[in-house]
Image 1: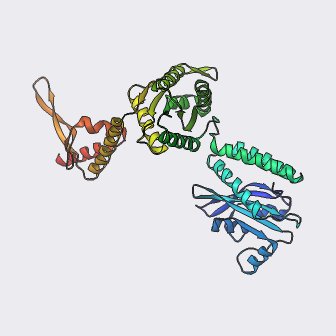
Image 2 (image 1 turned 120 degrees about the horizontal axis):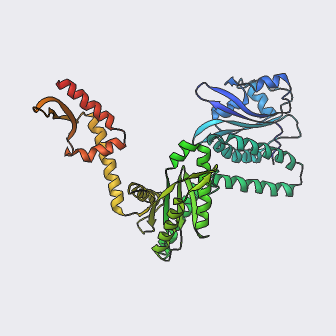
Image 3 (image 1 turned 90 degrees about the vertical axis):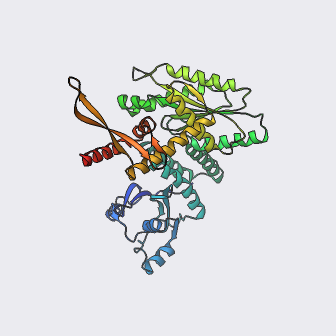
Amino acid sequence: MINATNFFIAKYSQDDDTIEYVYVVDEESSNSDSQQFFQTRKLSNHYSELVIRQQRTVLLSKEDMKHLYESGQTRKPTSNEHSWLGVPLKYSGELLGVMVIQSYTPQTSYNQEDAELLNFVSNHVSSAIKRRETSDIERQSHELLEQQVKLRTLALEEEIIQRKEVEKKLKHTASHDSLTGLPNRGVFVDLLNHAIACNKRKPELSFAILFLDLDRFKVVNDSLGHHAGDTLLKLIAHELLGILRNKDTVARLGGDEFVILIEDLDSDKEAFEIAKRITELLKEPFVINNQLVFTGTSIGILFSDERYDDADTMLRDADTAMYHAKDSGKGRYEVFDASMHQRVQNALTLEADIREAIEREEFVPYYQPILKLENEEIRGFEALARWPSDKRGFVFPDEFIPLAEETNLVQSIDFQIMKKSCQRT
């Protein structure tokens, strides 16, 4: 699709303002000057620096190169440089580097259509770099480059067919989880928003969300390694597909979280039956590396309701129900109700008040005597943390200490009590 006989990817380091050529295919790579060119260097006056500094596509003809040199913007072009095309590699607004193809022959000149295709490919290369899937991506990129060179010699009809096939694969990669092959969050959100819209038009088209979080997954990773954890995730994804109906969708949100969309519900009972089958299935051990691995899952269930207008809000509430299931003993499912959300809001407000109270040093020590039982002689005192809040009044320890421990704020409270105790002594 593009003559990429001469192609390179260079990563940009903002910390030390350097450019590193991490992948190079070049006809003149045996040339000593060319080898020197592809060494890691500080940013200077090369064409790649134009892409990095401007953070946009740069397409240069031989005349463009001469003009840039004469105006003092870039280096002097070599006699055999004919056409140059570079695009930035960006991920979520962050500049990762530059991807370039260049031609040493008048028979190959790049145009705007090539620039658009190279930009399309650059989005996926950027995602691959960010996810650190270097080994697979390098192999796929090498195969794709070889295929592109061969496709250039085919007839126009064959070129169009192959281009559509590549675009289809790239779209699949962008919409599916690379580990399990399941749809990713973006695809699931689109499907859920569509289900919400259908339910608004036809309330009888009810649906449910099942939000799954694996129990003891961290134990598997820590004890058997991340490879075993990845294997477990793939096995579970396969089993979930076997449980669901063809019209249902299971996606991986990331980590050990899965989410399921169950559409066209005749009754809530269908969702409960699927949740029960999943919890029962995941109670059974999986065999990984000839070793039994036990896990489980906590599931939050949320049914369609006219009050929901977007997927993110529904996922938030389903996630809340899942955490209530986990807090209630794991290996079970819970249906979301409004009180769950209120409890979460209360916890967030209490956490904010605790942080503010730490800054204002509102926590004070209450002293409990330590007695010698033989003669009831006072031998010392135990300093207990108490909170006479300016905003809440006196807050009892069982209200704030568990949350302080959960959010790692209890140490700051301990230091405050210790400091005030020492000052009083």
